Length: 144
Image (tube, rainbow, N blue to C red):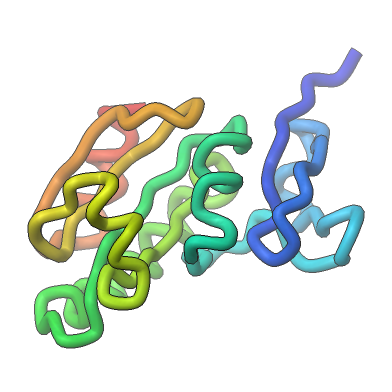
């Protein structure tokens, strides 16, 4: 019997069951047909944060950032590169702390950029400060 994982559609929050061997094939949501595991960061909001973080079988790395933060803006290209490098085994996401203050408060985000790694809905690690793509990938692989 094939091995399956559950991944949450960042658009409609539907939980999709995907055969592990097909993760690289660009699966789409069975409900809304949006890409599920895109090789770039997904945007998390109050509407989809809990579903993506707690219902996905894959680890989820969230970059908490703010539009006014120069280090956040300078790290954005490296974060995009890391998303492509970790795809499709880790979901990379971004959460704007200015727009989503309740999420940032709940998770005690005190500075940006801060990256939090979740697995099974539980925080597995946290690191602050701008990082290169190689540093992000190495840190995730060390903590998964």
